[in-house]
Image (cartoon, rainbow, N blue to C red; front, top):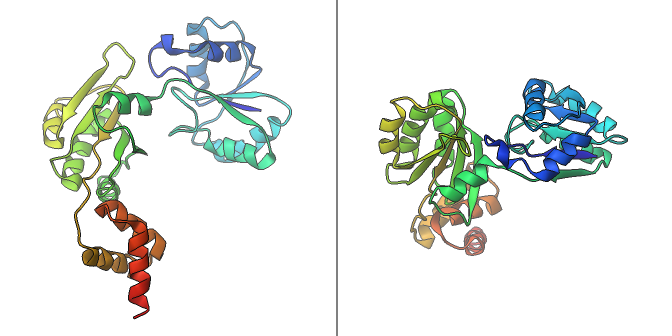
Length: 273
């Protein structure tokens, strides 16, 4: 069995009883950083010393099959440095390999920087998308932001403090400076802080220097009002660019608030003329 175990993202008091119990009885732990996991065991006063196996971004590709095969007969607890493994952390490759072998995969839920930042951001929580870390290179980051500029759902990003100011500036350029943004820093820790404002307002703050773990929550795009004729033209342009008709209708519908089904029927009717 594979057991994905969520660990505290800052405050040790968030370690659940289930997490402590599983770690106290674990024989094998696959850890993003074995040194970090050793410190966690000591901090939680866990006397058990399981076999620690490194599972990180650089070795997961070739380690996943080996660990999945081991999990056929042994329980393997998987932990990342903080939060839930496999969510913007190592673990997905192992889970995929385990599923292929028919190995049971379960999880011990716990702290999540994504969900906590969303909940305290003050932005809509009914529909959201997690975009993970933005690309490090400025050009790639700008392209990634332009690609989600029309996304109507609240968006959540991870970012490093050293790139925060430039990332916020690029968000302002891609999304416009009307969007509400919340920058959540050091969640669950002593210096926890949430800064809310527009991109330009937050850039000024970030340029002074920011430390700690960063989560950025961005308001989704407002639906663009468009006539059925204009929307049909947008669908046609996307299809001519190589997109499937169904996908093109869904994308235009999300951006305009029109019915995807109506756009699809409109496109089919246009083809038959």
